[in-house]
Amino acid sequence: MTKLLLTFLFALVSANSYAIDIQGEAYKFSGKINTITLSESGGTINAVGQTGQYGKVWLTYSLKLDNPNTPNQGSFTGRAVAIDENGNRNGASRQGVWERKGSIMHFRSLDDVTDGNQYLCLTEVNLIDDSLEMNFYSVK
Image 1 (cartoon, rainbow, N blue to C red):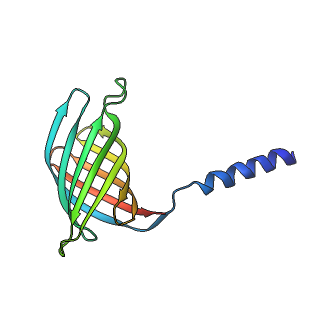
Image 2: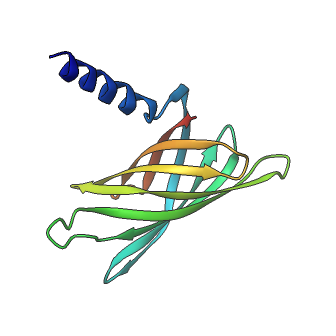
Image 3: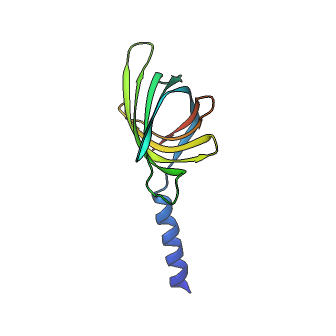
């Protein structure tokens, strides 16, 4: 019984040591879809918007349909470029998963920014009005 309890405690502590630590309140990003380009294997969504921390931001989502049995979800990679009011530029690589429910797409990504920050991004895109809303959280 003691071995079983120790094994359970070790597994619990090990799992927590690799958990993502979300820090602070969410940063907000609001934008609009510029273009959507479709392909046999998925498509590309381009958007532009504003966020207080980085200024004007351009986003690209390169969607893949990974599994033909689940046509309303898949993975994506992407890029982000931002310019603030002082002309400072930052970029980010983006990777994650997406799903579509009706006219709403949900994206969950991990972004690595050139300023050294990493973010967990939760994004909702309305395909009817082309709006994009993102909450992004600092992770360390």
